[in-house]
Amino acid sequence: RIAKKSYIAMLPDFPGYTLDALKARMDVLSHGENNTWTQDERVAFFDLEFYNFDADFGFLLSWSIKHLDSGIVHDVITREEAIDYDKLDKRLCENFLKAIEDVDLLVGFFSTRTDVPYIRSRCLWWDLEFPVYGEKKHHDMFYTGRRLLKTHRKSQAAIGAFLLKHASQKNHVNMELWNRARLGDPVALGYVLDHNDR
Image (cartoon, rainbow, N blue to C red):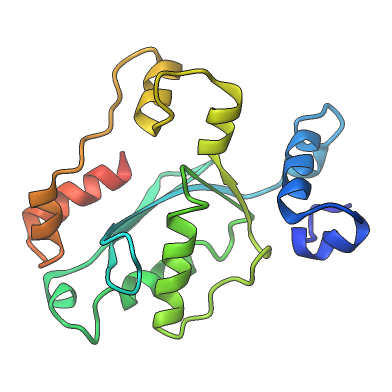
């Protein structure tokens, strides 16, 4: 019954709950035996790569989305866009918004503090209509891992290596390549996009 309502819309029905407390409660309920209301959700895992952690100084280099029931879709900035201040990541933002139109639940890693605010900020910069807060459900696996697991580090690579019982498949951030990518170097952008997909 409540699957089609956003957390914001549900808040008045749960007096005394904060938005975070309500999300945590729904997370618990969604794992119960009789909660079939989550079964029809369209789920997608996402990640962004960007230059500069502050969206007012930086811009997107690439994004990658893995729908639960299909392959990866992604986009990467071009050399022409990277060196044109009036273009930069506008096309990437537009394409990201199109790619999540039919998604009910977005899943990321440390995305509450990085990816979601970053893409929202970049879309606002370009006057693009970002989904209203609470319209799309969002789950940050960083907090799930931190809450449920005791690993030496809480990074995606460490948790992934632990759960999969082998070394992480993720390649590492190379500052030289990121600096070259922000200027549109095709080889560097290929590396960034591969990192993004992994």
